[in-house]
Image 1 (cartoon, rainbow, N blue to C red):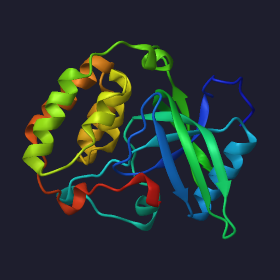
Image 2: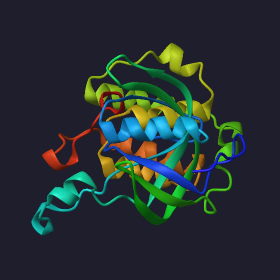
Image 3: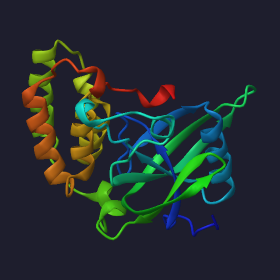
Amino acid sequence: MPPTPSGTPPSVIPVFPLTGSLLLPGNLLPLNVFEPRYRNMVADALESGNHIGMIQPFVPQPDNWVETAETASNPDLYPIGCVGKIERSESQPDGRYFVVLRGVSRFRIARELPLCRGYRRVEADYSAFPGDERELASLLDPSRVLRGLRGFAEINSLEFDFDLLGSLPGVILLNGLAAALPFRPAEKQALLEALGPMEREELLLTLMGMGLDALSPDEYYSPPTVH
């Protein structure tokens, strides 16, 4: 991939499929990368603009799904992900990378390209998300989200530092909770695909009002820091 101007997402990006992981514009996402193909991906990204796309694998229904070695290694992907830029990278003595991505913009997969050193790449179309790079400048009153979170915490016997959360700007609070709360992968995807912060806020409030049900084996939440 040729280098791109700072702040400009490239049209061809490597993608890191990870169930339950949500990257949104402006959010920080830590990743502990140890699988060889993704170590290759990080090494190549550091040489060519620092961009990596985060995207969820699509989990088919069990009754119409026969897993093969190829599909297990390269599962179908949701059509929309979010590209991030590496803000911090530390190589470990055993070859692993610890990286921190900052979300830049959502993208839609235009087409998938052949594998490169074992990892997947796509042509990314950003045209449906023109406001993403300005999302953190959006004004959003955090009071509704905080009220919803208090009810959510009570229903699910969870504890939060509300003094700390109350000090955050509205969009940062909104996107942070959307990424951090353990919703199902499909619910995470819906939060990602929401038109903008106002629509994401409404969906987050709805999901928090529903509480958390036990996840089935096909809907597990996978923390993004342990891949």
